[in-house]
Length: 254
View 1 (cartoon, rainbow, N blue to C red):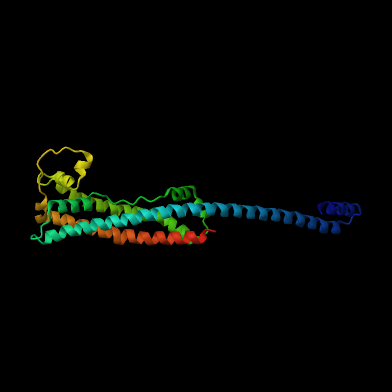
View 2: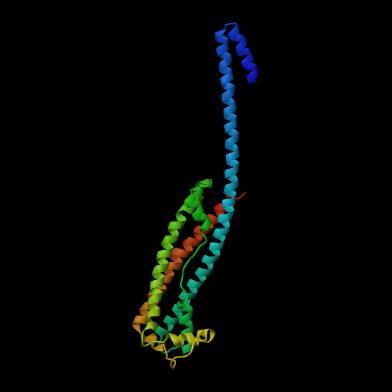
């Protein structure tokens, strides 16, 4: 087609028909422009197809990460609730001095409630890579992008609450760093001494007198309050947010 226009252009110029030449020259320019636009359109379609493939890869990876993180959070919620239940059981003995537990039962409650720290460690390697590289923009769903962007700051808020809970847990554990109470008794009663092969260094000392300590009671209460705040005000909303993210991811996966 372009060769055809060039031939006509040469004929028109030879006959000195300038006005007709301009018309054909304009037509030739239009053809070139159309060709460029078609090429750009093809390139855009190819790039869109490439971005779509990359988006699907990211979505699959994010789905796996958040599913793994959800399992971790579910387990952590159970551990936190177990700690709360154990601490509440201790308070029932504090409230009723006539209902004193056996040393073994008291040791098991203490070990159950305060031996495990609470820390949510989600799988965020892919999400961090997407944020740091700027590839989060590849995700076409704007609501999903918003939730993923806010996810990191939400985790920082969770970490602050977990630090507060750890402080309250340490206050209880500090009771067994004093001369009057015995960590050895707890570890022996729950079988940790036997498992680790730790030698007994002195006669076993009872910890039951802690049940009449106001300081111990206050520390338990503060621990329960911090544990409830961690679970109800942080972990449960976080679980709902994770479900929302996973639902949006699933909708975008083809």
